Image (cartoon, rainbow, N blue to C red):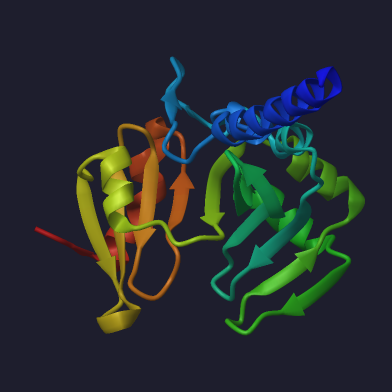
Length: 226
């Protein structure tokens, strides 16, 4: 009889432990790193996912996420360059996502890195993707983060975005019809959320102190909504 009670006690404990395990946040959830948790620093930067955009670098992101990014440089026919670290799959707050971390480097630095590139591939859009020389990869990894783009694997409803961030300070639309993308701008925290009918939301974080300058191309190409 005593053995029966002991077995029953163990079974009840296992059930309770299982329920508690479901209710309590796991290791990823406990970190509290969600796209809507943005902190503005005293220096005018923003901190999200444990990274200070405008101060930390790609190497810091790799150590924090325990994931090595793919470093690449992209060049357009107009002579524009962008260097970035691409994280194909990360777990943040229990959510799977991709991250793109752009390096804050001058046009001259990027142009020289382009010239030293080891291999060039032309993408469908006409943009060229450049495999960088090892010394330039190190420079990109060490440069401050200019912007951080979060691409969740699941659709996040526009109502949820508004519920978390509130009404955007401004809305700008790019494109027309079902291909239109509406940008919800939150300059106080340096955030641009791209919302559309057909695609998943895209969250781009930049230092609030540089928000207007970095969003200028969007203002030039898009239509401001009343």
